[in-house]
Image (tube, rainbow, N blue to C red; front, top):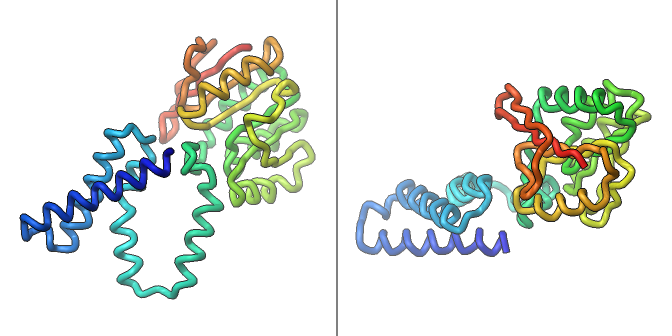
Length: 243
């Protein structure tokens, strides 16, 4: 459904721009045409309430296509670009968060919470390239750390970065079929779209007294035990939920 909405936003924006170009000669200019279509596509995405990162994708899509075609690049370049982007942004078309790297401040804040909890097991859902899990595994050698990431290329990078850490594992499990009962602390940087479902699963599977930390997106119908406001570049907010 997310991909279908994105397709509609682009096509409807293109049709509207062709209509404007039919009546107003100024829209015959390639630059005016491209950015008018992009702006209309962004407007369509906003009205359809697509996730915020899709707005940037819509804004840059047609101008990027135009630039690539004017550069007359070899055909294999486009295939390679599609393959690489697919490997990186594997779940984005299904509504997942694209690859956003958590800051070092996030990793440090989570490490402090793990110490307070005397945690022995920790998993990062949507771990990306291990920007949170790797520093924690290096700092807290007594904690068994798992980085769970579905996108193939970030998973490979995470596994390579943690290859020499005996307390670190990189996995590609499906969040919705995995068993979360063995973890003392779970950290996630996911999407508002999946938060209701993942929250209910965690409530039903995590042991009493364990902790769930959600970066940036709160869990609906669940009162956080505490909320941490970090002073990093993204002004990240950590929502902490006690089972």
